[in-house]
Structure formats: structure tokens, C-alpha cells
Image (tube, rainbow, N blue to C red; front, side):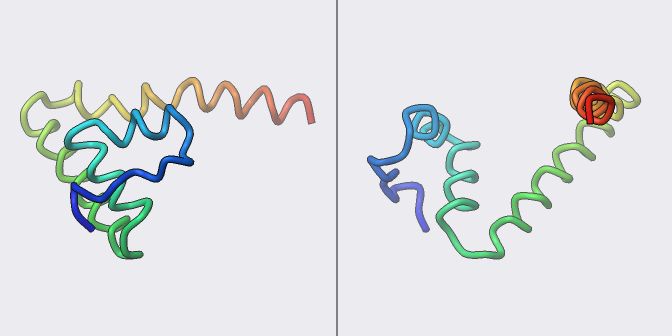
Length: 83
């Protein structure tokens, strides 16, 4: 897999646009179209970036995933209460 691997033309427009982003798109393209173990490399990269952000900005960076999960928890609670 290479950064020069073409994006399939049958992919939806938003997928082609997302995979065209220079660094994040290359990693996402490797995860989607590459070998099975590429997902583990992507998870290690994400964890390393998070740890580096915590080292740089402290408690603020530690709270970012928790704040991002708040809307998901609201949706989950609404889905549970309707069921």
C-alpha cells in the first residue's frame, strides 16, 4: 500500500474527499484498503498522539475523549429510554 494507491472511483464523494486529506487520509486508506494489521498501527499512532498531547497540555488533553463521548452517551441514553 502506498500513498499513490488510487482511491476507487465508485466510492462516495465524502469518502474520496476524506481519503484525499494528506496525512489522515493516507492512514485511513491504509486501514481500509491495506493489510489487516494496519488497524493496530493506526491505534498505536492515535494513542501516542494522545499521550504526547497529555504531556504537552496536561489535564485539558486528558479530558478531550471524555468531552467527545458526551453526545454519544446522550444518544445512547435516548435510544435506551425509547426501547
